[in-house]
Image 1 (cartoon, helix red, strand yellow):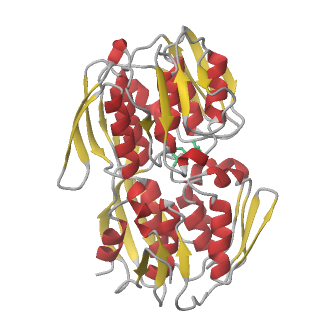
Image 2 (cartoon, helix red, strand yellow; image 1 turned 45 degrees about the horizontal axis):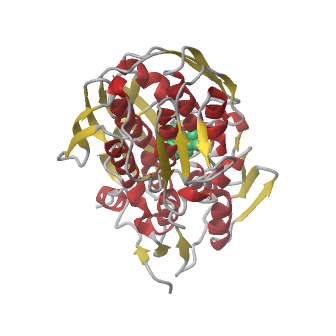
Image 3 (cartoon, rainbow, N blue to C red; image 1 turned 90 degrees about the vertical axis):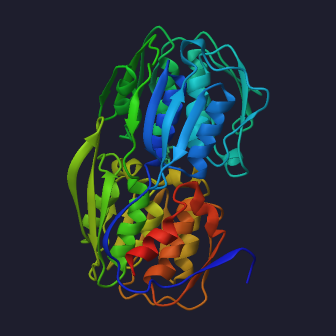
Length: 439
Ligand code: S3P
């Protein structure tokens, strides 16, 4: 057996009862980054304490924001962040290391673009392979420069200053791209608009008004009018639906399970996985209980479903489930018939090539998968029997680590996961939380 293997054993019993999941990763990044840009001291709570969010915290500290967040009893971070405000970020002495976090580096490119400083952005070996041209291209149209010229990947140095507004038709639905352009647009005189081919998550549009910056948004378009300096705000981060998805899918697969996940974001741009599970015939439902600012939250309920069926997920719904496709693919492997995820090419440029990883992992389970162009097909096997001693490689990708751990947790024999600790990127307490639900 190779090094650094975690043996994930079957859950002790069915999953039952209520739980909460850590704060939403996308909203936590934005709370940290927007507070750092703001004038004055913002109050944030429910912030996810994970490696990715710590990358954003480290980056804004290096750029001159004062962050005093403290660990709370529930494991979240809460406290004050004093931003650099209208004075702008300070010139850091060293390159800013964004770790594994695509959201940190891509949003920072937009944040730094308006300012007359030169900041080198870098990251770990995974982040240094991910495409950055999608962000630098529109920002260059606005007047920013990125060196070395023509470079597609990190490290990249941002040379900011003197931006003009832009109307941009994005080539792909990406909240990171949309957000980077809007954040830069706040410091250009006039209206900056991003049009997308399909709706992506809208946390930026919903959160900027909490910092006194008006946004206008439609299903596939968002605008901001500059100059607009954000002012200190207050943000309460609800639970992360992308983390909840692993618990919900586990409950759907583990016989006799029935769980509720409380205080989780029910933003419609994020709970596409619930709609996909419903279309597979899974017993899942949501109930709204409140709102944090403009972000709705509530309860996701999920129960064991023995008779899942395959379904087709159209291209315009993919951005809404992009982070959940690996675990939905595992559920599809247990369903009767074929599931098709249309136009999932974006999976190739996530923390790893998740399209190849899904196909490799399901092949180990003896499940047939194939691609036609960018469409992913999975031929489910109801009653799928998992052989003993299977080993899955997380490839250092948090969502793959959790997806393949479900093979062991919800099955009858253990599964071996290489580099399982990648879960620390988004959900450090995942194994404890899921095992607690089964005691
Ligand atoms: C995110 C947007 C998505 C998502 C990522 C977080 C965000 O990426 O996959 O995990 O917080 O804006 P893209 O914008 O590249 O689709």
